View (cartoon, rainbow, N blue to C red):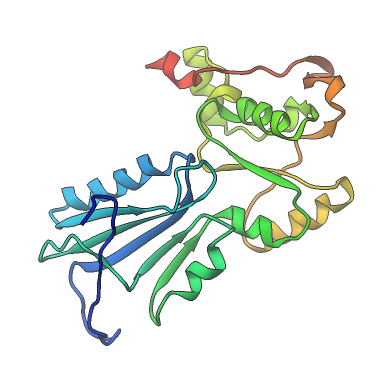
Length: 243
């Protein structure tokens, strides 16, 4: 069998009321180029370090960035390494495949979904991206570059936790260039912003308007106490300066 082939092991149907010990499959549905492989390996190693035999398989139709990928973690006391057809726990982070992924789940399975899925379902979002390494500022640059637009961001509107501000001040780093995993940047028509915030609030998700889209020739600007400056760009994450 070529090393790129994936074997699927058929498992007998079992009652979901049966007590199961250390025998389950987790599937993480994401996209290529999102950095998900690192997070997947952290989860796999965490289970392994708990003393549970575990294996991981990555399944993807293409190496092209942005196309779907599925990472399956199988934990079981016998040390099986083949993928199991049934999935017990789905982490759905790809809006393009979420519906199909959920439909494959059997009775009793659980699903955790990303905020991006809720935003996509709102029907008012034009674009979205996450802010990871390089922080919010760098992610905003990437969004504007991809869309061919300018930005005007209001610094005072950006929600930054008090503890984050204190730590950044202590190390002399800019929180706008600090890794912001878990943050999602959305763009929507101005007249639909309140509707979007309402829909997200109903799901328990906080959403704050921090700026507006402008013509590309106006540049990417940050308003700080009424003064316009260039929105900073960070080639490397500010966190590296504190390490």
